[in-house]
Image 1 (cartoon, rainbow, N blue to C red):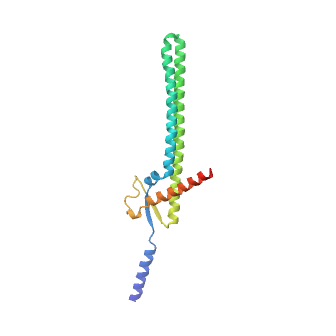
Image 2 (cartoon, helix red, strand yellow):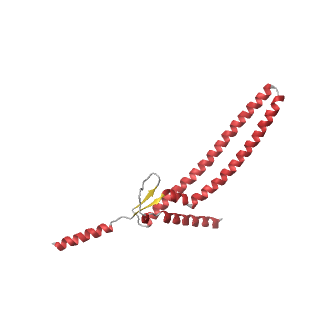
Image 3 (cartoon, rainbow, N blue to C red):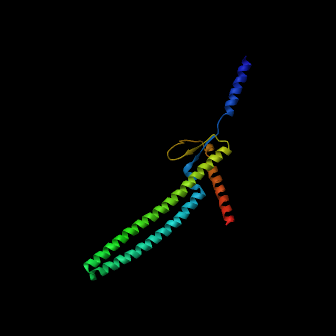
Length: 179
């Protein structure tokens, strides 16, 4: 009888060890921040934003020159003509401001859309990584505190970043070779 209990205890212990689920975590922010695809997108948009700012500054300088010219010439104009020109400049200023805001909004929306695709790609990659490597769970550590503590040995952040960047670089090389 004692042998049966020992065998049962060993079987229960063995089965509980075998059913232990593999759980790890990643630092979401670090993975996203160090993902080369995200860094490339940020660099592209930095260049686009600088070009936008230069264009906006140039148009604004030209407009300011026109305003100063009007201010100097307004003394020699009739009051009616000066008022018409003043109204015209006011409308143009409003149109330029609206155009700048729209262009900036389009730029921001494009950036947000590409960053959203980065987040989606990272989620899909982590899901695939977890399935391929036998994880029951891969938790996300973030500022909101969903993982308050995790052993360093359970931290997959660096491994995921390296694998994600390797995959991205391979895709980029393929795209470059196809061109």
